[in-house]
Each structure stands twice: as structure tokens, then as C-alpha cells.
Image 1 (tube, helix red, strand yellow):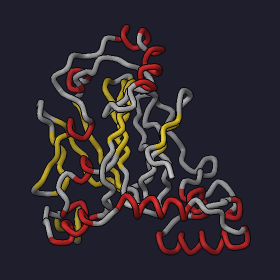
Image 2 (image 1 turned 90 degrees about the vertical axis):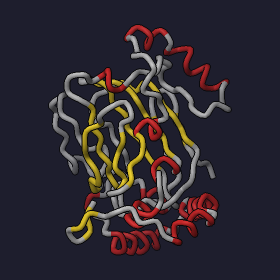
Image 3 (image 1 turned 135 degrees about the vertical axis):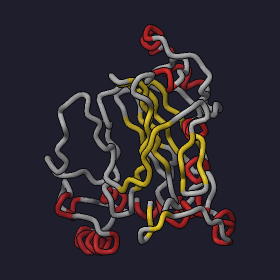
Image 4 (image 1 turned 45 degrees about the vertical axis):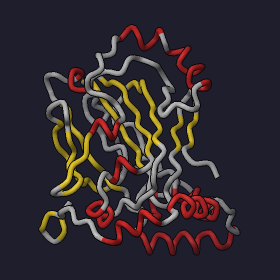
Length: 275
């Protein structure tokens, strides 16, 4: 992330302290309620076109006519027209899971692997994922064996700080899953006008889901350079699993007014914030 050719540095200021005092979760809930209210059909194109002008959304890619999005929330999570994003069919190719701006990209090195938030401050990848790097590698046989009992366990342990949803393997060491090629990370920022659905970056098996209740700070450039551990403090959902090249994880991080993260699968639907 750069600003006019100069790399942004960590600069805590009084506004970061002010953000901590604001009831951002309550504000986000109110916004969620407003965006779930049905809009009169004749008014929908007016509102959505105004939104598109303000946040530079591409309405030509919308999967439906504007008057068919009953609420602003429906418009926000709209689908795209078929063929808007051609996908490489090569099974060894990774595709971007979202439309957005790449802020950081690099290789994770060492047991205490860190990701740079901005110049001058980094955060732990294991704090982000909520996993310990010292636990044993998953055995392939454990995944199918414990699959059925995992969903029952999920329903009975609602007080747990993390919950397994699709399978219940032993937590593995990500570094040992990719001993030859290494392990890399990519941080992608979605602006309000961007397409907000998240897609699978590869053909992979999701083994673990973790939901972290947290704050809802904004994720814009100013917040990134003023709030320590921004991505760790915010509410997020982490998916972990395996693809043909080894370990993979995807972390979806909530933000102010965008606190609802839905994870859908053939087995269950998870919503982090319910109005």
C-alpha cells in the first residue's frame, strides 16, 4: 500500500482512540436494519445509481435489473452477469477470491510468521487464524472419520470460542503442509463499491471454520495505519483446509457497517450478525 509513491507507515493518532469509544457494533446493526428495508420499485434505480456514482460501482455487471433488488443489502451483495469474471480452468491456478485492491503480498517465514500491516508494524498470522503452529499435522484418514460427528459437536458447543463446521480434524502445522513451495499470503481490500461476494480461490477441501467475535473498525487506509492489530481485533470468519498444493486459509474480516459475514455450504449456513 502506497500513497503518492511513499509507503504508508504506522502512525497512531487521537482519532484511533476516538474510534475505540464509538459504539461501532450498534451503528452497524442500525445500518444493517436500514439496508434490509424494502425500497419502493420506482425508487430503486435512483438509489442504486446514486450509490454507484458515490462508490464507483460498475452497474453494467449486475446480474439483475436494478428494480429487482428489493433492498440496499440485496444490491450490495448482488451477483454478476455470467461471464463477467472468466476463471482459469487450470487446477494448479489460484484465482482471486474477491474483487479488490491487493495491499500486501509475501511469504510467511519461520514459526512466528508475521504479516506487515503497514511499515513499522506487523501482526501474527497465527493470531489472525487462531491456530497454534506447534500442533501436529492432520492425517488424511481423520477427516472422513470425524466428519459426521463434527456437526453434532458444533451444535452442542455454542460457548466455544471457535467451532468446527465441515470436518473435525486435528489442527495441522501450515508450514509442514507446504514444505517445498513455502507458504504465501495476500491481503485484499474491498472498497464499498466493489463486488462483495467471496469465491473459492481453488478446488479445495474446507476442514475447519472459526468465527471470532470482535470489533468492527473501518478497514480503510487511515484505520490501517493508525490501529494496531486491526485485522485481529475485528470480527472475522476463518476457513482452513487443503488443496492439491497443501494448506490454504481464507479470512473474511468484517468492518463498520459491513459486519454480517455469511458462510454458505451444502451442510450449513453461518451468519455472524443477526438483526
